Image 1: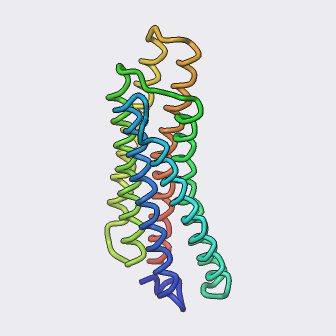
Image 2: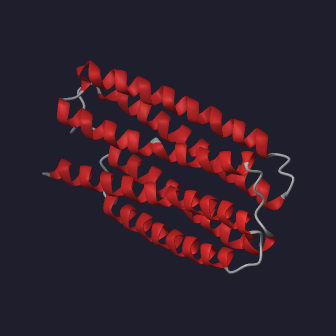
Image 3: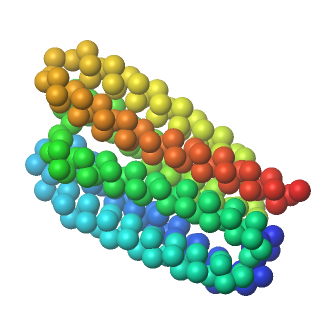
Length: 216
């Protein structure tokens, strides 16, 4: 239970678990928002789900700030504080990636053409699976459970799968006969979607390094 890092560990663990619960709400609402647009071209539920995602993202920022205040009140030694805050700040960039995708869909009024729907659904599904696995990995790390490296390998496979889908999608987009400007919009959207699993993979590797440091 973070005995490697903490003297006053209980409150800190509680806040990190709270953050992870909120992180789950963020990516679940994000997934629902994106799929509402794919399944319903007029996106009737999209605005509500985007607002929910934004709300939970704002809450995540508040939790990070509270964790930061607690950590720098001498709960941890300097090196440990830096490790944990780098991990949390890295993790907190994923909600930002999700927000960018929703922002683009809303304000560029992007509707996924039917011919690309299946690939986009797959890209989002695998990206969310990477987020779910990352959350499990971090939880296991906090509890000092084994399996950190196993989770990292799973996330690495998700990232590779997303990379494959992303490249295949972009190829399909630029060989299609849709409007050239829409091609560029869709390419940018797909690249931003691809950032989600890339980020999860980087954070997962960071967790694995921290786990190894703990054993030294």
